[in-house]
Structures are given as structure tokens and as C-alpha cells.
Length: 517
Image 1 (tube, rainbow, N blue to C red):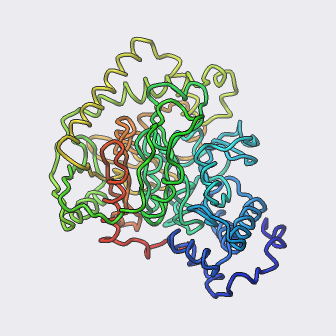
Image 2: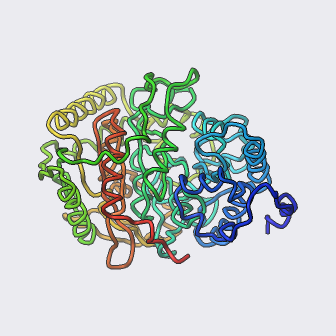
């Protein structure tokens, strides 16, 4: 076990910290960041001991969930020791002081491997921190390692050629979702109270829904990334970083830490100072108007999801909000071709596809390699027409928010699928089909938008529109798997989304519900 080699680092207890039975209680890891930090600042809990607990929790669970691709006990414990010394000396500490966390393995962390879920990058060590990572470190967060992702972050489930699929802590025969599946599984398993994810089509909200935790993506550009080639300026960069946590307040804190302009940020970063996401969380939603849609007018919904979300949305009415059924009149099926197949694939090809296509196709997941092939075929005319369709859709979503404060809908059309199955829409219903390793790794008959459609059907709309969106737990399926309810806000109104999420959380506390893993 890795920890044996590093146990000497914590073999001496620091008498400055009070002895407490809580120190050995893994239930600490299921508490809020706020409560844990209070214990740390009161010297009731050592950051080193807390980090050790998280590392032990990884060892207890990771062979079951595959939540982490790589983790770094020595680095994490050394960082925790530095925070401990700051506290002992009475020096100022950051918002995440001593709190263990993790980074999705699409983002670079200095001196850690960044695989991006690919065999081609399995040994690549990063020499720089992503901006959000840099800020977590500045706020004294303790980064344990890198969480599992599908190759290139390109799936609503987390599967790659690096190892076994990322599995759901509620039932290990089921998927944790994707593409932030490792983050979702690790938080749900009680490894850390909060962790970083990213969302380009639902990749925070999908695993948060599957794993029964909270997750939020901000307005596009709220949390910056470093300039990096084509992705730094192209007009349809739908991906953004965000937090995933057990408690809404913890996500608000991590968002506060990561958000805001930066001189090295890519084009499209919001240049205004971010609002205070934390202080007024309990403002409530009385009097707010919510447009409620079960299916956006065209999406088949699993019956368990339908039951749970229809019950969950009634909470907003109980809290004084005006919830109105809303009929989407925009034909969302018309968007799949121009946005996913044209804009998305073209952007992927432009961001390095020429070099990718020179590599051995066998090194890739088939659907990933095929997206580069498809992107190469996109014509200028197709691209311009697709941009026009995108802007038409964005205007439509903006028009909804002229009359409503929020949109609410299921986070996912389905509960989690089994590892050896995949969900599809057929004849107006959700069906699950066999998805074995031979199909997954060897079949070239992969139309990305068909086999991944169910997974981004409820979420990707708000990547395309750029609005902030969160998911809250909304109950369990008959098989005991979590489902989620989505809350979407006006652009740059993350505060409102967090307040609505917190109001729902108070009415429906989910924190005592955790998997038995």
C-alpha cells in the first residue's frame, strides 16, 4: 500500500492540536467544508490527519470505484503540513485551508500526470497549474490527485483504455456517469467534501445526478482557463470548470475560489469581478418564477425520473416560488446536427485533429477518433449555418428568462445505467442495450451523437446557451440509484442558482443519505 511509505510523515502528532476522537472518525469526511475548516482553525483537527483520512479512504474505495487515475500521498501530506504550520504560526489562511480535494484529469496540475483519459498521455507530467488549480492552492486546498475521465472528456459515462470503468458508489454494477465520473464517485464515497469537475455538455450534472451529490457549472467564462491554442478564442467553447460537493455551501466556496478574470485566461472569460457566492445563500426563492419542463417537449424520460422530479419540483412551490409548466417550442432535435456534429466536431479537429489523425487509431476509444474524422469533413458553409442556428437558440433561451427567474427540469432522462449497458432513445422510449468491451473498444460503428444522446439530452442545452446550471438530488429509482433535478438561471446569476439550490437543500436534506461502500 502506498501509504506505508509515507506514514513517517504523520508519525508525530503536533501537540498544538487538541486530541479528539473525531480525528479518527471517517464521518468527518462527510461533513461540510465549513464545519471541517472550523475544526481545523480551532485546532481540533490537524490538516495532516485529515489528509491522511482522505488518502486512506481512497485506498479503501478506489479498487471498487476507480475514481482516481493517479493520487499523490507524499505531495498531499507535505502540502497539508505547510497549512498546519501556517495555522500554528497564526498566519492568514485561505477559504479551503487544509481541505482535501481532487482535480478532474483533464486539467493540468503541476508535477502530476494529466492523462486526459488517454493511453497517449498516460505518463505526461504537467509543468503548470490550470488557473482554477492555482487558485485552490492559493487558498490552501490540499490536492490529493487526479480523478477518472473518459478519453478527452467525451462521454456521459467514464470509460477509457487506462483501466476499468468508473463505477457508481451506490451500486458498483452501475456507471458513475461522466465525464466528471471520478469526481462524482469520489465525493459520493466520502473521499473529500468537494472536488473540481468540468462541464461541456453536462459533465458535472450527469455524474452529480447519478451519484446523488450537488454540482454546478457557472455561466460560460465565469471560471477561467489558460489560453491554449484554438480553444482560447473559438466562439463555441462550451466547456467550463465547476465544483461538485455534498453540500451547496461547499460548491459556493470552491466557485468563489476559482472564479474571476485572469491575465492569462482564454477569450470569453468574464472580466467583471465575480459576485459573493457565499454570504447570502439562504435568501430563499419566495416569489421567484420557475419555468418547469419534464422533457423539453421532445425527450423520452425514464418513469422513475419522471416520478422523482415531478415530486421534487413541488418543493419550490412549498417554498413560495411560482412554478409554471412551460412548453418548449424550439425543436431541440434540430440542434443535434449543427451543434454536436458540426460545431463540436469541427472545434475538436481544429484544436489538434490533424496531428491526432496521424496517430495509431488503436490507441483511441473508437468514438473519440471518429469525432476527429467527422470534424475534418465539416465545410465552411456548414459551420456558418450551424453558428447561425446556435445564436438563434441562444436568443430563444434568453427570451424565456425575460419572463422567468429559473428553468427547472430533470438533470438526466435516466438513472445510472449498468456498466455493461448503454441507454438509447428509440420510438419515444428509453431503452438499455448491451455495451460490452468488444463494442466499446473495437467497434467503428460509433455515431457519437446517437450513442451519447441520452446522456447529454437534458444538460447540453445550457452549455450551448451559456447559462449557469446546477443539479440537486431528487430521490432514488426503484433500483436504489439517485436521480437529479436541474436548476438553470439567467446568465451571470450563479448566486440565484445557488440560493435556489440551498433553499431546496434545506427542505430536502440529502446529506445523511450515503452509499454503504
